[in-house]
Amino acid sequence: MTTHQPINASAEIRSILYLNGVTKTFDGFKAINNLSLDIAPGELRAIIGPNGAGKSTMMDIITGKTKPDAGEVRFKDHIDLTRYDEADIANMGIGRKFQKPTVIDSLSIWDNLELALAGNRGVLQTLFYKLKAAQADRIDEVINLIGLSEKKKDLAENLSHGQKQWLEIGMLFIQEPEVLLVDEPAGGMTDYETMETARLLKDIAKSHSVIVVEHDMEFVRALDCKVTVLHEGSVLAEGTLDKVSSNPRVIEVYLGR
Ligand SMILES: Nc1ncnc2c1ncn2[C@@H]1O[C@H](COP(=O)(O)OP(=O)(O)OP(=O)(O)O)[C@@H](O)[C@H]1O
Ligand SMILES: [Mg+2]
Picture 1 (cartoon, rainbow, N blue to C red):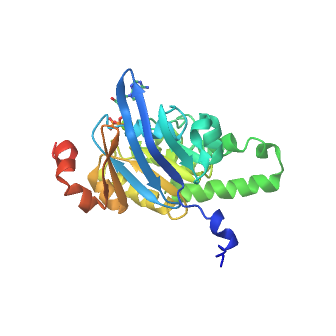
Picture 2: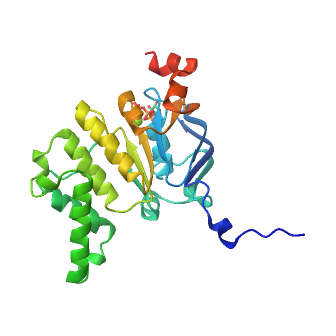
Picture 3: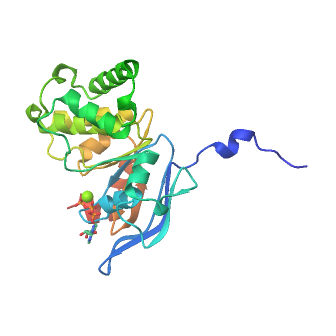
C-alpha cells in the first residue's frame, strides 16, 4: 500500500535557515570552517562566541555580503542563497541590523521609520491617501513596539544610544522581513536598555525568526532561547544557556576569559 502524505506536508518549511559545511577563507585564514546551523521557522536563536569566532561573517554569508568557498546556505529549505546577491536576499525577507546605526540624526523618529518603509515599498509611496493612512498606522504600530511613542516627533539625534538601537530595529522590522539578523544590539547600552532590548526582540520573535549575536550574557539569559556557541568558525556547543555555559570547552575559550 502506498502512503500518501497530506498535500500541505511538502509545503511545510522545516528550516527557515540552514547552513551545512560552510567554509570561508580570507587570505588563507579560515574565518568560517565547516559551519552548520539549522534555524526553525519562528525560532529565536542567540549566537555567542569570542571575538573573531566568525559570528558577523556568518551573517555576511547569510545576507549575501560574502560568498562562501564551500557549503550549503538555504532559506526555507530549498532556496540556495549563495546564488543571490545582497539586494535579492534582503528582498526575499532576510533583514539585517548592523552594529553601527544607520538612523538619520536630523530626521524625526517618525520620518526615519517612514523612510525605512518607503525604502522597501517605493512604488506604494506613489499610491493614494488610503494606503498612506495604512502606512501611518503601521508606523505608529512600530513606534509603539519599540517603546518610543512619546518621542515620535523628536529628532533622532536627541535619542539615547539605546533608543537609537531600538529605532534601528524598528526600521528593520517595518520592512517586514521574515528573518531578522541582529548583530550586537546591546553593546554600549545601560542595564535597563539591555533588558528592554531583550523584551523587544522576544516580542518580535513571536511572529518572526530572529538570530541575535551578543556578548552580554545577562541579555542572552533574558532572551531565554537556544544558544549556539561559535569558535574558530564552527559550532563549539549548542543548547540552553545553562547547558552551553557549563561546557568546559566553552568556559575555556570564551566564558572563562
Ligand atoms: N572581509 C574580510 N577580510 C578579511 N578578513 C575578514 C573579513 N571579514 C572577517 N574577517 C576575519 O574573519 C574572522 C572572523 O571575524 P568576524 O567579524 O566574523 O568575528 P566575530 O565573531 O563577529 O567577532 P566580534 O565578536 O569581535 O564581532 C576575523 O579574524 C576577521 O578578521
Ligand atoms: Mg562581529
